[in-house]
Image (cartoon, rainbow, N blue to C red; front, side, top):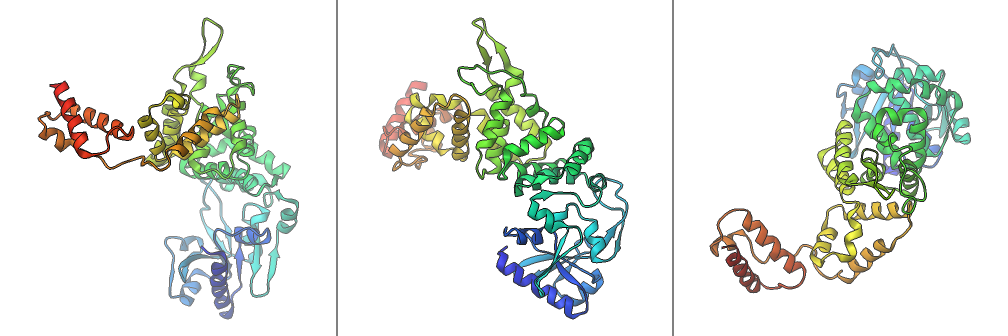
Length: 442
């Protein structure tokens, strides 16, 4: 959504509501973002008009089951805007939604919202902020504070506990002490939340400007141990000092989170989870050296279970788990055959995996020689195709007399290796090599 276009379109909706005799304002996060000069993700509108009155005014209006809560959606241009009637919420019995809503005034509507910085209204026709909750003062202080009693706000919707942390790290604000105390006290209540709602808040926190602080706040509040116990379990797990002078596994991971800069969700979660296999594989050998045998493989399996628990998609799980499973293979790069190295470069999430390796080394022994070797070797073959068109296929092998079975895949792999190595460049030479291989299997 283009911010300029969307504000113009949303103002048109405001103007029409105002001409019909209703109050109408921009509301919530878009006002906050406007005041701190941050591009708004969406523009929401709050009005004194009832849902029926809104629908009468706008032809392209739909309720999509939101009408019971006073919300109507209006299409304006290419965008859709939510228009909500000022309301006062009834009791929250499930820690998520009110049992009922009562249409009310703008001031009462502001009082039901979560944080003061999200309780602001803006009248675009007058270029005026309407502030019933001292949200502007908190914006200036860069302070996240619950509206009214913080315990009540968090009891209404337990997801607000995660949202508080997410807003704090996205906006780089401090959390009001009373709000923080209530958050920590009520953190156990979040166990009733739908995993996918928590997943989204965690992801947004970890890709924020302060992913390390997000981890710290989750830890200090008790949410980390509750929702990501595999990460919390890394605390106190010692590592070989010659490779990890920074400290235990958790210290290492925390440092890595601090190195993230505008990461993708896949990279952020890969960094967070890449060593979760270490606690269960910790061993001290006969020479007194700490070992974590197969922690990469075991960690990838554990990460899959954790990500499934949070309802990640299969594609997201594969990306993150593959990065974890392969994060110890980089040491083999100097001795890799060219074909193996090209396959590494051709991996769909190569950049994520390489960045994970770089941050991993930067936050431990600080030896970046392998990382540099990857960059240099990649540059040296930049003109060569990583996935060349196959010179032969399975039908060619069947025509050469090879019976159907695993031998076909084995020979095709050998031919592909030699093609990647530059040893085979033409179909005829590939067929000749295939005949030799078929005969060797006969």
